[in-house]
Image 1 (cartoon, rainbow, N blue to C red):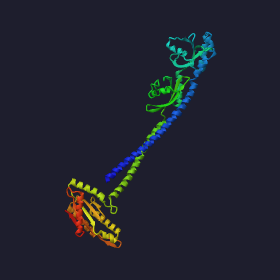
Image 2 (image 1 turned 30 degrees about the vertical axis):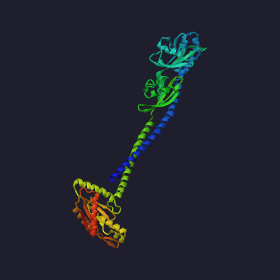
Image 3 (image 1 turned 45 degrees about the vertical axis):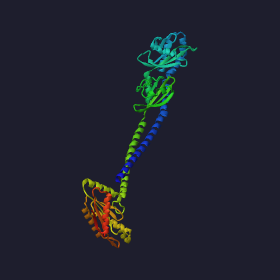
Image 4 (image 1 turned 180 degrees about the vertical axis):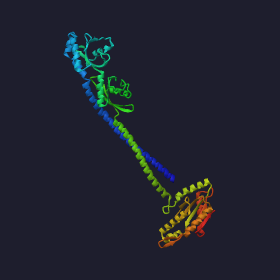
Length: 485
């Protein structure tokens, strides 16, 4: 019975552990997921788009200004009149270009005439544009733009200083009747543009870069570490099509184990996409740290609960085991637990080649005690007999209340004759004991049967033999011991 209760207890503890840990894990996971999704949604739908809007507004002030300047130059009456007047006195146009460059702080200003193919620069006439020269292909590309497209932005080496890279705004020029007469524009140093991008990054604590409609990175800050194309950037390669086919998008991908949120929007004046990136923020890492902290606390709470449950169950288990194995009146072993003691003693006796004896004891004429003095006195007599039995036996001997006034004694490693001596001593001690209760004084006697275990005998057969011996003691006048041979 003890093993069964212990196994049930272990099973209960395991089930309770699994339920508690599962509940804590599920609750913490749901809380983390809800908080993480809410934060991600806030970044994707509000924070990052707002930042992108602010950067776009600054781009309109900083980077779209050259487009506006080029537009003014293309529509300037002086430029068109000078060109239509057979390009007389080139110094006038060169001075004009120099004034534009100085006034608007550009690194270059230029005009190419369709008629003469002269490349007019703020420093003079640089060269003649040739349709066979690869470096001049940009001019013919701009000239061939659809009517709806008036300008193109490209990044090339400076025509006047090949060591410098320039962001050119090439604007088509038409005469007063709408005929194409050349290309004008200004240029910004790429380094200066990169500084603007880095300024945006520093101001908003985001990564900022531009890509063209094919996904090629056109402008980026110095801290840019990605590939030169969206399609070649791990994580972004799967999002490239969505970015390049939508005027704006809010997306996310994983890079180096961290979530990266991006917002893209088409800058129509540049025909480039502005990409603003934000890596997993500290609050997200804090969420993850909180999640693991919650799990650790949950584990500690679970351990605490299990310790309390184990102690409580242990206390109740011991109480239940005591109730299940002990006679309530006397505290002696009851009939159910005696069978376990008996089986264990027989196994040990078989292994060690020793003897086992049992004694069956019955209080003589116990019904008269109850009838004459009442059941409370009868209970007192039974408890007194129990105490005498304990005092007369060894610590490892077992006293079992077998029935109402019957007791069965288990005596390991005791032969029949020795068992008879112990039984006789018990009989004599009980007979001499006077029980005083209020005005009553009474004494009782007991009859005892003794039996020793025989090889191949079942426990039931042995108990039956000792019961017969007890019956003989009763038949022979009571207050005596009979041995079962």
